[in-house]
Image (tube, rainbow, N blue to C red; front, side):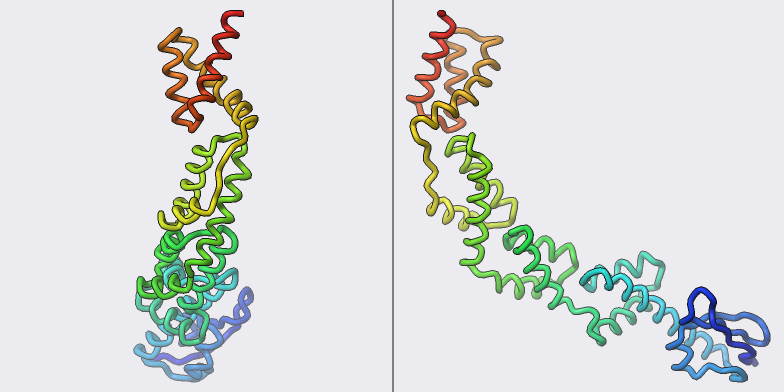
Amino acid sequence: MQVITKIGRQKRNQERYNIYLNEQYAFAVDEGTLIKFGLQKGKVLEQIEIDEIQYEDEIAKAFNKALGFLSYQMRSEHEVKQKLLQAGHGEAVVQESIHKLNRLGFLNDESYSKALLETRKRTAKKGPAAIRQDLMKKGIAKDLQQEVLGTFGHEEQLQLAMELAEKAIRSNTNKTPSQVKQKIQDVLLRKGYSYAIVSEIFGQLTLEREEDEWSALIENQGDKIWRKYANKLTGFDLHQKVKQALYQKGFPAEVIAEFIEQKEQQQDE
């Protein structure tokens, strides 16, 4: 027979209590477990009751650890579960803690997924594919992923994608229309937008350069290319390599021809 002979509040944690059985320290419980099992001095405990109390206290510790984890920001059920398992709590204890968190409203994957969607759209202008990847990493079920992403409408995608495209245009004023177009496509695909959205964006943009702009662009990019090949090539071979490189960058044939002619004149001087 084991009798509670002393109950003492812990100094470092005022919400936990040390339980002494037959004058010897046996285990500790939090205040909720103490009340739930009616633990008090003189109470007789069978071993099966002690095991149940300790199991319940383990759940309480996992639950409180999860609350601390959730206090910083919203988390998915998967994230909380992994955190508790990494902390050394058993699978059954973790499952009970997760169930309690869900029941009390501290965990809700639907609310979490909707919040994550809005955050990714607002702060990073991410598209559906990228957000789906984020949801997958958080352990969100596929059907819930689909449901949440279904609220991300076509017009909103187009608006955010256009904002990204316009930013890319502003950041690449020293590039040819072809290069800018490639930059826009790279950004939008990396952000998770579909090829269909990319195509629509290009259909709404006019990427052109004025005649005087071409001169500045080719002077900037062309000089680097010319120097690169002039160290090892001359004459026809040099001209062909430079033409090919500049054409791939989107320079018009007449602009390339004028640039090479200028370079030839400089060499002759």
